[in-house]
Image (cartoon, rainbow, N blue to C red; front, side):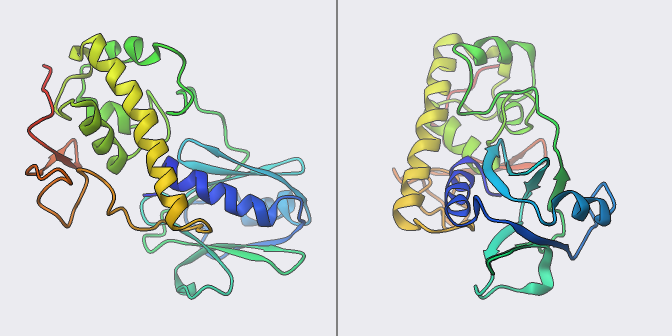
Amino acid sequence: MPEIPDLNIFRKNLAKKLEGKQLAEINVVNPRKLKIPVADLKAALDGKILKSIERKGKELHFHFEGHTLGVHLMLHGALHWFGDNYNKALTIAELHFADGISVGITDMQKAVILTLDPQPKTAPDAMEMPTNYLKDALKKSSKHIKTVLTEGKTVQGIGNAYVDEILYAAGISPYSKADKVPDKKIEDLTKAIHNVLTDAENHILKNFPDTISEKERDFLQVHRPKQKQTLKGEPIHVEEIDGRKTYYADSQQLFE
């Protein structure tokens, strides 16, 4: 699933080519997840100028004149420039701009969500949390810390892979109860969120500066599905926590 580091780079690269251009047509190939009639979406967006593109949590918001198109890529959704070699049979929608540039949105699971004028979320973005926010927020839940950070109700933008990385960097077991994590460790967690996501974005940007689709994650420390050890050589444990496959090491402290 594309998360904050990926989406920040997608946003920048999409914006460089698309901002200020007129959308000639949005073509919805698979409206399975669309909550409004396709005709209403087209009436709102066709012919409009794209003013800006913004990342909100795990979504990209395309701000057109008068309306916003929200795109949530979910687990397997992907963006492609037309001309790239991609499977058009998996297409959910296409954005065709007046100067000939087109973007395809694909998903093998057909789970991509398109939203017209998405409503703002109440939880803060992981990169924009107020000072000491997590110290108060985590005390309100006895769920596993892994679950609290991924479900999107407490913080937006981080998913399964990067939560594993963040908890590993902070030295906190994913099985820890959120309300039992001490304040000092929450400080470590807050720093880890910023550092892990920033470092990941810098790595991807260096290796795939022009990408608008998710790339390799071999640089990750503990969320390594194809490996049995962390980059430091620690054994990786793989278990499910609340339905999410979780990767962690013995060095992560349990609070319960």
